[in-house]
Each structure stands twice: as structure tokens, then as C-alpha cells.
Length: 139
Image (cartoon, rainbow, N blue to C red; front, top):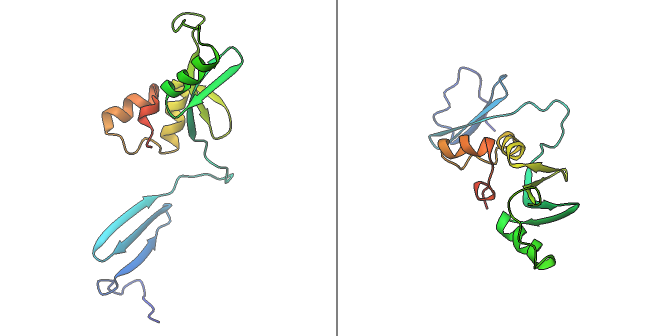
């Protein structure tokens, strides 16, 4: 087993980690360098995430991977319901990993904090932070 000190050259080592005091881990793998910054979570709580799209009609909740799927579920129970705007319209939002119903605005902030928007380009990510759509979440 080899031991490497602070001043040793790591070029001949195919894989190694460098853990810095800044809560950042850097690892090197066959000449490539990867870095990961750890978010502070002092209480070690699970970070709340967006789970599924939801429509709230009165006290009834309808869910789906997308709001369209939630709408289909609503229409199965209420085939004559056709008010999609105004006061009687269902509230559009999301269910979080803690079971909360949140609106699109709060959902965008939660998804951003949970790094669920990292796959989006910067303009889409910026819009999604304030108005999340189910299509913004990775499959």
C-alpha cells in the first residue's frame, strides 16, 4: 500500500480524492478532475424535494407526473367539470417529499434548493425558480 504526503506528485496515481475544508470534494480520475460542493445541512434533515404535479379542487387532490395527468384524474371523477379559469378552477401546484401541497412559485424554489433543475439551461432554470412546470423536472 502506498502512502502519499502533501508534497508528493499524484500524476502517477489513477484515482484520488482531495477533501478541502471548504466543504468541497475534488477527485481526480485518469487525468480528469471533478469537483462537488456540499451544501450545509447542520440538522442533517432530508432536503425537501418536489415529488409530483398536483391539482387541488376543494379538499380533493389529483396527482400525476404532469399537470395534464392530474387533470385526466380529475376529469375521471368529475366528467362534467369544465371550469378551468376563475375562482372555481383547481389550484395548480406540486406535492413535496414531506407531503405538502405548494404552488408553482414555492415549488420552483424548493426544486432549485434540491438541485432538481440542474439539467435545465440557465434561462429555463431562472424561469423555473419562480414558476415551476412539471416538464421542468427531470424524468
